[in-house]
Image (tube, rainbow, N blue to C red; front, side):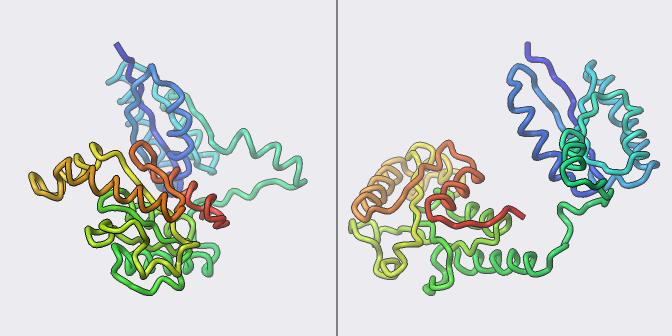
Length: 273
């Protein structure tokens, strides 16, 4: 029987850093079931004591020592959370001392800097990219001249969430174009995409998985029939091969992986914000 271990992501900011690193670590341990909760903005000792009490209660409930992935920088807050008796994993601790030695300076304990607006130009680039992705979703706009990438795929293959992720995390101006029956009747690119060939990236998906997704959206419709899904995917893949468009299957691929592959293939160089 799989053991269950409570996990808590505790931060004086959003908790995104702690949760991201913690999740990556915990996925390496498949024989344990983890139940997790995030506690963001724990920036006072009083709040830290409240969190410690909830962590202790979870340990009693599950009969197992809790694990805390901690990104708080205030020493007093960290000490208060430690009173929970949990295994404390500080996401910064392994890196701070080597960096201090290398840089010849002591770190400044600033709370919430990782996800704060410290560069307004960069922040506005992300906002503009998000607006671009939304206004160029599902072929709404015919002007792709300002785009960095155009994702091409049949409906429900993962175009929109990938565009939003690219915009939000990298400030990439990502548009997408849905292949409809009129496009799929030919093995050539739609006319409006031909001048943008160097920006195109094709997404494909297993027809069975596509049918499941479409069934949730439009149950028992022709749109969701397996035969329809098979025909559309086959036609799209034929087009991608004929036009030599780089392609990736989204069937078992996360949005993060899709975005990374798109950027690498099209040589889009941006730092994650």
